[in-house]
Image (cartoon, rainbow, N blue to C red; front, side, top):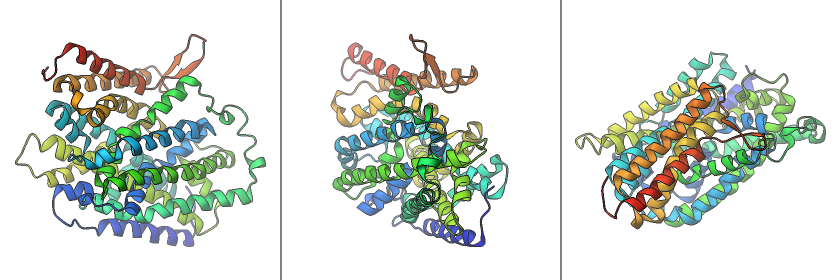
Length: 472
């Protein structure tokens, strides 16, 4: 547990209350599913940047976990790839996504390929968007403050957070993000500045940068670097990213907003990785759960008052991201799974119930896989690999579409191959999915490369075997 003073509780309570009240008091301008999912496609540049940065950086405690494994290599593995693909998204996709009539990835698949592809895409989006990592991080934060068991902390944190936002959707999330955005930067500026003054880096960080954590690749080897870099393609198919681009007030807001967000991520990476290095060096003995590194560093390094600010910023960031991805998964359940098959169902009501289902799935998955890095690297990899090629085709080359059934089968088989590889690794005590190279070195293969390779190969085979317009 982290002990907070009265000043800390006051600062934390006021700032957390502001986030919850702003989100909980939001109301839809029109009671329809489009306003619920996209806020009427009216996000201004500041609102767009705030919600995109907070949502995409909702995995903040995972950076501490990553630094404990990879050291300075975290920037290469979990920073640089997302800048590259973020810029690519801005240049190639942002304007197309905003200009399209479809506001979700499954909807685009239905339009370009057909209903079976749309259903497979909706299933994969639900699985990718389920905010398990964020539910886990909120639970860890609550446990660090309350001392409750992790399972109870995950359940309570996820349910309370989502209950304040489920009614108004993206409007509520954006309003809360306008508070969480400056708080996340203020909290990490405070902790990094304090550490630099109190603990000179040449002394504090020297010992931990000896060995693999001081290597440019985190001691992981070239294949793992390639795998992590390709995982940055998650940016292209991330449903939360797509939802915000589709919700921008204009095509130019979407394009420029992504570039501004990339600059914000780069600055925040500098802060969070520096804080992570200090956490690994100063939090001794190391906690059994590396997700506790940032909370424990705040408990040791920050003076009263600033601890509360730091926790408010971290909680607000994670909470916003949990709500954002629950909304994405929930709307996929309501709009893209239920509505096309039961036209009499109310899409808005179905989406709200979908959010509830997504949160419960997130809680169950977070309890089963209590590692943010594992959820990113393995679980997300097999979904991103299955979606990537057909998604790019749907937006960049829609006229060269394959048959509906072939696209659906290709994506489904690709996901199952990646999932099977992940399951095999867990069953054989190899959750890092290490493989032995011809040189004798071991390196992580991940799930994205097998999933993407199978999906892409099947799509190419389908192009050769099936005439245009044929059905499977």
